[in-house]
Length: 104
Image (cartoon, rainbow, N blue to C red; front, side):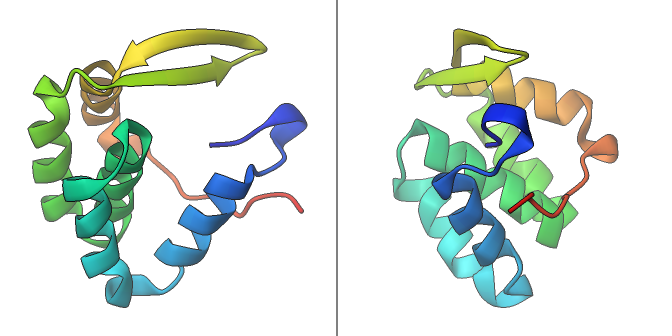
């Protein structure tokens, strides 16, 4: 989501702009969740979480059996994870998820 030194990636900027539309973005987020790439499915569920926590939790729970592969960079390290692993992690910390403005 966030690239080198906290700079927003183009994908994150698109996600951010979508979520900023508020509840009008829900149909697009649901479409990502149902028809997107593995990363897009996770973006869709997280976006739903920000706009409708109940719907977001259900979406994340639905992804807990998704074997799609993700490439995740954290702390300068790149690793492979499944959508399922990341959805489970988000569910474990859902109450602490925050949406920050990206750096320009």
